[in-house]
Image 1 (cartoon, rainbow, N blue to C red):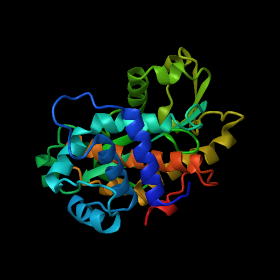
Image 2: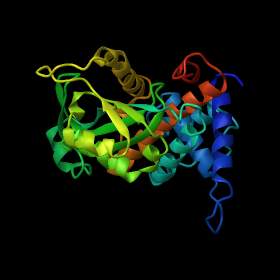
Image 3: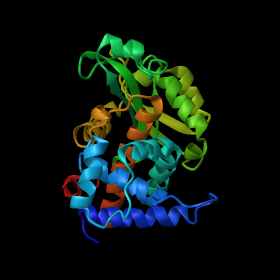
Image 4: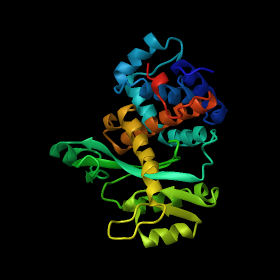
Amino acid sequence: MTTDINTLLTALYVKIDDWLGQPRRSGRPPKLSDAELLTLAVAQVLLGIRSEAPWLRFVPAHLPAAFPYLPGQSGYNKRLRAALPLLKRAIRAVAADTDLWTDSAWVLDSTPVECGRSRPTARRSRLARWASYGYCPSHSRWFWGLRLHLICTPAGLPVTWALASPKVDERQVLTAVLEHDPDLVAQRPGLLIIADKGYASAELDRWLAERRVRLLRPSYRNRTPRPDEHLLKPIRQLIESVNDTLKGQLDLELHGGRSIEGVAARVAQRLLALTAAIWHNRATGQPLTRSLIAYDH
């Protein structure tokens, strides 16, 4: 196997098609199968084409015969939004097919997903029920939108994620995510989660300790630092580099979603693309696990 976009898409299609198996729906099968839809969505993100209309014109010219049938822009958009549960399950299925999935350490952080800038947008948008104003310390600016809370392995493989209002406490999001999927923790006794100081909470520490999970984070300035705290900085930079990959190479901030379903589907689309690249790099023995350079052209 080689590291190019065509090989990745072929391997991903076979993986997803085998994972899905025979369709359970009754009636005539769709012209574009679920496996083809997810592969098409991953290809769009990796090749950096944000708008759906140019993308559907690009495919026949640059990926000939890869997709025998392509829907129109409206049909593709509707299929992609409706496929959000499928995208979530596909991320898990592809990630679990790597040796990184069983890693006993996780890295946790949240990053802004901006959804608009003008005040009229904030008032009239269909996202107004979910999005809100929040502050991003790393960029020293306010934004209107959501926050992506991402848990991944130190190699950058996504484990689980959630979108939430910037006003929701990060600790509450972490608790809700782990309660929603308790098997993730149960399958990893002695799990270590590395986070920033925003997750400091004695109550959260007790809640995690009951589940045999240890949370490691920097101390506040007015508290005595732990002996192993000097080891946190390079590890914390890992999650920052994952967010940089999502934003700098996979255009997370330019998602174009105008509804909660649209934003969530486009975030999941990018996380699936990142997961697929890591999965393929591990399968082909590449030295840089999270490198996307071979797949962006």
